[in-house]
Length: 155
Image (cartoon, rainbow, N blue to C red):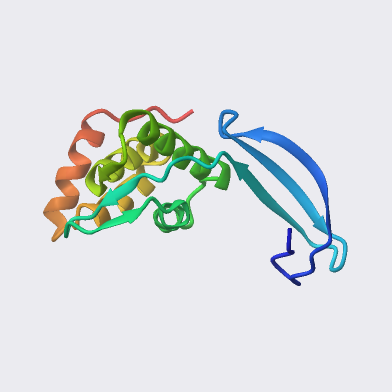
């Protein structure tokens, strides 16, 4: 495994543990050249689900692209990287279990929003505003109305 910092191909594994409900192995590594630490994930290579975009084009499911969108929604929010990885893993597992080879991007967005809402409502609204392409403040109000009617208790 090449170090993402110095690109040396000499590291050691400090810790390995199951992750994402046993669907991945998380490895904490240390580069022997620069001494920096980084994390890698080992996942089962599954058949690639194709995403049907709004314009009808198809592209492979991209874990990194999904994570980038979630990270933008969670910017400056108390959401850990492990929580985002768990959301993505849950969505990937559901896609593989319930869809043959193709799924509309709309369905993936809805799944992501379901999981994100449970973790952080502000991040959920941010994600929804981009995903659903809110045009004005009224769109925000309509999205917030159900949440305001049933406020979640903070513990």
